[in-house]
Image (cartoon, rainbow, N blue to C red):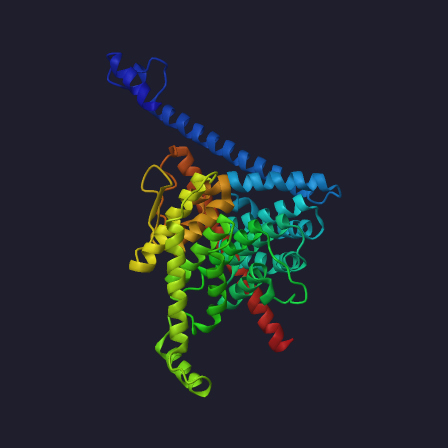
Amino acid sequence: MGKSKRNKGSRGGGDGGAEDQPDGGSDADSVASSTELSDLHLAHATEHVSSQEFVLDNYIDALYEKRGSTREKALGALVDAFESFMLLGLVENKYVTLLSQFTNSVKKGSTKEVCVACRAIGLLAITLGAGSSSHEIMDESHPQLFRVLQTWPDATKMISAVDCLAVVTFVGATDLAETQLSLKAIWDVIHPKSGSNVGIVRKPKPPLLAAAISAWAFLLTTTGSSRRSTDPWKEPITFLCSLLEAEDRAVRIAAGEALALCFELKLLDVSSSEEADADSEARKTSGSKNQLFLNMQALKAKISGLVYNLSMEAGGRGADKKNLNDQRDLFQRISDFIKSGECPEESLRISAKNGILRVTSWRESIQLNYLRRFLGRGFLKHAQDNDLLHDIFDIKIDRTENMSNTEKKIFRSEEEKGRALKLNKERRLAQERKHNILNEQYG
């Protein structure tokens, strides 16, 4: 803007001073005008944020309504907002209220309300990212989610509860014990005979079974390969192996991905200490020295054979060619991995400059596919702007690459404000902890 005026002045034949400006303006006036315009943009942006907060508060108010359809509509609007925007700055001080109303909908709502509320809880955890807030979300939502999984209502509710439980545990769990609690709850859906409700034998329908296996594998990615014994994994791996022969293709695919992860985490490998333990125990019982090792080798061979067969499955008349090709491709990759250790690789462009998401293992591939499905149309937005996804997939991205100078100014201002708020919150929590310790000691 100022540059344009200076060019006009020079073309006027003067020395470029203020008197040569055709509109009587000066460079100083131009800079001042530009600054005022930037401040005006900043004011408009701040007003926009305030407007978003006003709308958010209206949706929160609607969650208190007695009419279920009103709550459903508000929940749906909030889910849309979580998908469309990165709402961290707006919800980090409101998440307790939001969570309370979301869990209330899971407890008392219709099937549709329960499903949307479960999704809203998961999106809230992803938005807030790892930390004390998401840990609180996990703790507070567990009772209602476990209740849904233990009472076996309709499959739609259970699929939503399984997805939500997997996501809030993935984001919020701080130790292996918390993850194992959720893994156990989801496994009881996959294989109910091993669960607590042994008096009532239930069998999940294929859509629920496939969803539960995917959720279980998603959480298993966070446990690493630091297992102490192969023994606890024999039952789930054997059962997953049997599901490779299931009639439903989605179940076979979910089981295949879970087994590929088990191979990657070396859950079928018998350590030398386990062989020694097996030796000692075997001498007491059957006299077989290497029974555990032989059992796991036989299981590996069986899985390998089934995987190869699925990679070569013929279509037949009336077969869904796309899904069949997807199955063949997946099981070919699993077969290659079992034979040679070759891991799947995938790259996604997240932004125009340097924003590349790469996965080079089954663990990362399972995490990517699960989060991409759960976030739906919001995946790209969160991949660009959500620090949680940046940390998970080691995404390096310049968030200001497509911004104007004014937008960059707003962005940096919000970043500084966010850092200040976070520091203040940490100081407050530290003071509260110190106060509680003093009360315990001297109270």
